Every structure is written in structure tokens, then in C-alpha cells.
Length: 167
Image (cartoon, rainbow, N blue to C red):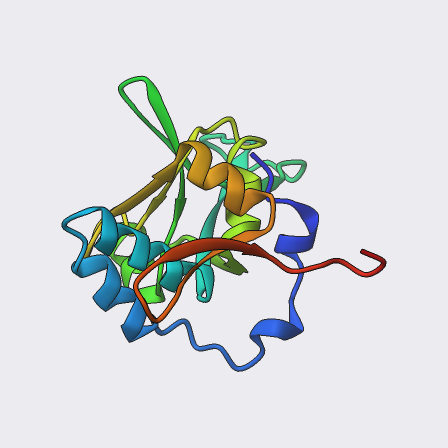
């Protein structure tokens, strides 16, 4: 799957980003053990920069070909009957999975919106560790729709969506 054009272009939002993972996100993912900690991990991810890997695909030949061209594609992984779109919380996790993959920085809602066009049903974060994490179903659909999960001081969770211009 070719990444959405806007994700494949350089983006000023991430100028100066060195690909380091957000330690709060990593801690939240590592702490997942029940529904509350899973929801807290989603809250952390909603406010974080993530990396979608893209790899060369296309004309594969065993000999030099001046007409050969490669295209960059987002990566999906099929596990049983489920297809996952891959993403990572930092360059270290991406390199642990595949050192030659190119990172495309993006936010969780952009990744979530890319899952279905990629032919996937779930988003799989940090496949090679340190703490793999899966998003799917209604939760993924809400995030793809631009909603963010937030946690209130009393521990309650709610979905919020930023109003678009003209709303």
C-alpha cells in the first residue's frame, strides 16, 4: 500500500524530531495489564508522534535494469485471519524490526485512517518490542474519525473531537 501522499511528504510538524520514543508512551504501553491501563496507553498514544515504516517495493529483478523503479509502501503483516498495519513509537523499535525501513512521522489518527486503505483491520505498534500493542475495532474507528481518548482527574475516560473550522 502506498502511504497517503500527505504522510509521505516532509512535514514541518516534526522538524527537529530525532525519532526518540516518548518515555511516557513507552511506560504506558509497558504497564498494560487491564482495561484501565490499556485505555491509559491509548490516551498517551493519542497525544504522541508515531512512526509508520515504509519500504521499497515494486520491480524486483536479479539483474541491473535501467528502467527499474521502486516505490515506497506502508507495511502490513498478516497473522492468521488478521492483517495489521505496522507502526512504531521510536526509531529504536523500528530499527529492531527492520533496519532499512524509512520512518514516516505521523499522529495516531492519521495512522488509524490509513489502516483500512492498507487492507488491514488493526494497527500493530512496536512489533519487535519493547511492548507490542494492538488497536482495532470501534476504538480504531473512533480514532480514525479524529476523536481522542482523554482521562479526567477522577479516572473517567471520554472521547473528544476538535471542532473543524466552520463547525
